[in-house]
Structures are given as structure tokens and as C-alpha cells.
Length: 286
Image 1: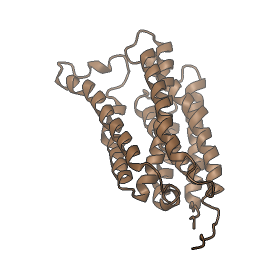
Image 2: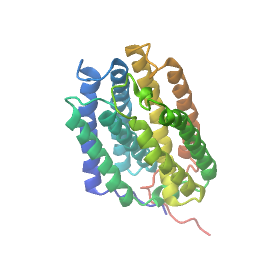
Image 3: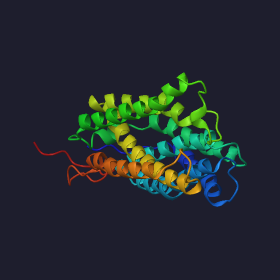
Image 4: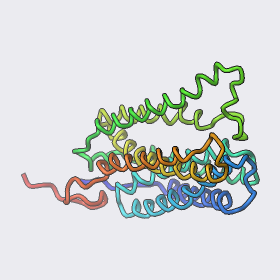
């Protein structure tokens, strides 16, 4: 018998608040001229990120949230992934965008998104998803996550280690308008270790691992789209900057397409008899 989704009312209201706060943060970031106070490339990156948050991630969260209320386990996975993407980029708006009049709105966006995740994940029974994925290639998805973790870590260390040994350790930040790279901090301290742990949980087919590997795949797809767009806007704003390039646009566009493959394996239908976790099914006669 399939299990119903139970979402506490507090989590629902936090998710609604996250939608409102993120919209309030991204609309002026993208549309209001001169509200961003950093160098041209940094402003361009921020506008590209804001556009994807506003035009892709927020609608995905709203639509998937509506389907979660109707009992869709797929929508639940997608909603968690969209919240994770918004939380990640809310931090970047706070720390990779020089201080500006939207600071408190950025704080509100991050706070509501983070607490929607923090309150929601412990309240969700991961079996509502794991029970629907008896033939999921969990170990293949875990290997995919680990490959991404290793490659991403090596790419960041390629910049970090030489900078630490250089006479001017901050030279790689010239032209960004910030004192350190919040992407390095987030990825190395939290997101990449989290992906490694999620991979281990999925490898062992723990129900929470099955739920989170799906959400991580959604997050990864949105992030690939977001980076491709922010690099395009950064390059358009300052074609000579080393902090944005068309090559990065192309790379992350390819990664987005690649990311569709494991996500398809996760979301694909396994049995025509199971379409919604809210639907009650009768035991199969022995």
C-alpha cells in the first residue's frame, strides 16, 4: 500500500514565504538598473542568477508544491530540489554581491528558504518516495554523484591551492568586488560533502538516500542552467573579464543536458499501476 504525503502546515507556509521573499529579491535584482553596486561582471552574474531563480526555480517550486498537495511523490522530490537551488543562490546573492539596498530582502529569502528545508525534511517520510522506486539504479546514481563531487573538488582546488601559495593570495578575486569566493566556501564545506553522503545513502538504498539523490539531481540540473545563464550575462556585461566566459556557458549547457539523463532514470515510470502516492491500492491476491 502506498503511503500518503504529509506536509505540516508550518512547512507549507514557510515554502510560500520563500516563494514571496525570493521573488522580492530577484525581481529588482534583475530589472532595476543600478541597484547592484559591484563590478560589471559581478552584476551581470547576479542578474543572470536572479533571472533563473525568478523564471525557472520559483515557478518549478510553485507548480511542484501544488502537485505535492495532490499527492505526487515526483513533485515532492522536485520541490525539495528547487528549494535547495534557491537556498544555494540566496547565499551567493548575500556574499558574492557587494552590499546593496536589497540586503535585508536577500536575508529574508535565504532565511525562509533554509527554514522551509530544515523544517520540511525531518517531517517527510522518505519511504513515500523510496517505495515507488524498487528498481531504481541507485548505485549508478550514487556513482554519478561521486564523480561530480570529485571533479568539482579538483576544479576548485586547482584555483585555491596555487592562490594560497602565491605572494598575493587574493589576486584571483581581482575585479569581482568581493573579499573571498562564497562558492568555494559553500561547495567545499557543505554541498559537496552533502552530495558525497547522499551518494553513500543512495548506494545502500536507504530511503532518505533515495529521496535526497532525486532532489540533488533536480538541484544539479537547475544549477547547471543557472551557471550557464549567469556566465552569459557576466560575459555580456564585461566581455574582457576572466570571471565569465562563453566557454563556461557552453560547458554548463552541456552539463545540464547530461544531468537530464540520471534525472530521467529517477523520475521515469516503473509501473503503470502506480501514478500517485496518495492513491490507495489493494493488496495483490496471492
